[in-house]
Image 1 (cartoon, rainbow, N blue to C red):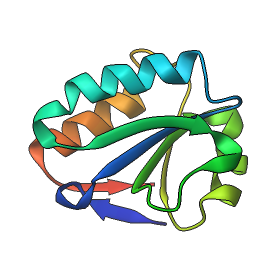
Image 2: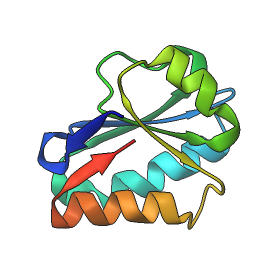
Image 3: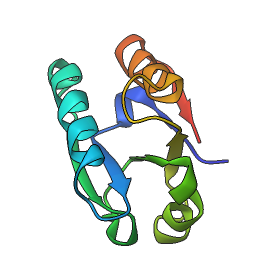
Length: 102
């Protein structure tokens, strides 16, 4: 199972089916919350996840496609775009330090 230390996270990608809509909102929210950590956050279609992504966030229904498109990356699947516990845990780990596990 891939993992990464929070201090080594430089780019988070929010992947969705088309790369618009809900992923844009989540990426914007994460950008604001991680501004002090100087982490780049972007959104992209699940089929075009950039190779330099450190962590990939995607809806649980897209997780298999995201794993296929970004093998070896830390993948955090979530159920809801706003307020999901998986996203909250990721933010907390980044801010307090520690290991992020897929």
